[in-house]
Length: 356
Image 1 (tube, helix red, strand yellow):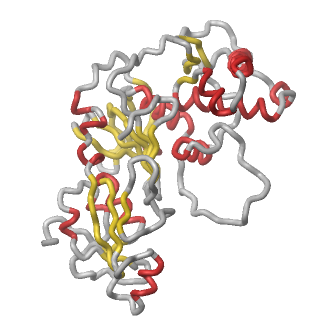
Image 2: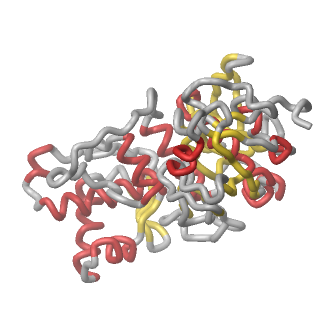
Image 3: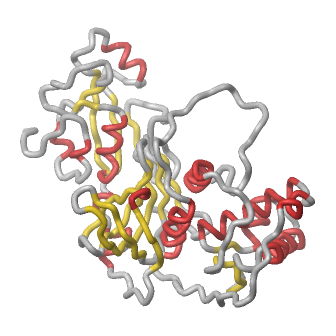
């Protein structure tokens, strides 16, 4: 994975909006095949943001105060708030680059935000950083926030209205709270350890200590990819099952095996060959739908994500293609391609140990 400053995290999109080809390679940054991922990797960073607690009563701006500002300035202030809340910090250069402003204008916007919400930020090491007393002064929709985090579009900005075509997109049944999401994304940017209570399907509520490095959209729910210190390995945790999430105080330094670079399943690339499902009478139609060449589709996926993608695409991964129904249009004829893939049990029809 490429390394980037934490204000602009490394982004990968994988998924159903891809342009399929005979040999589809998931580029770590720019390609798309099914899932949306937000990654952050830092080998060394000062994790302590020393922000003094506010002893005085903070007066937040009223709605009328914000309305008096120009629409362009409100958009810039909302962007500043988004960066501070979800990335943990913002510097003047990020405002200048985003909005193509002169230096003086960027400085004024940052100063104005601090004036409007003094409890939200503290200035340290040439950046405005998240303060423990943070209270947002703009309304942020969780769906738009997730889109901004994973595509970079519309960060902190209100929904676009105007010349949009009529459309419909399947909605997630549940979305994480903004507070939980912000705590997790700040930890990803700063390589922090988080302490939380996790609602496990097997054990119920239990304390966890994790080192997160990526967000994952499985198509059904949002997860965080993290090293779980409680379990001793990397795993995916559902964001909506996380409670009382907070940075771990006096956490020990990250061990090499806890860093994202040690997540073997995350970095392993798996090549799969998919065919039209043999139960369908018109395989050429399926081949056309998926842009197959010579009746097959070759895809390359992260091992950690392969099971999610195969489930989202409803690929029959049984050796004898026994799954029936119109939903199963694709078939993985060689399930041994999933050998050693940790997410394989999520794939429809996959049975460990019986695919040879």
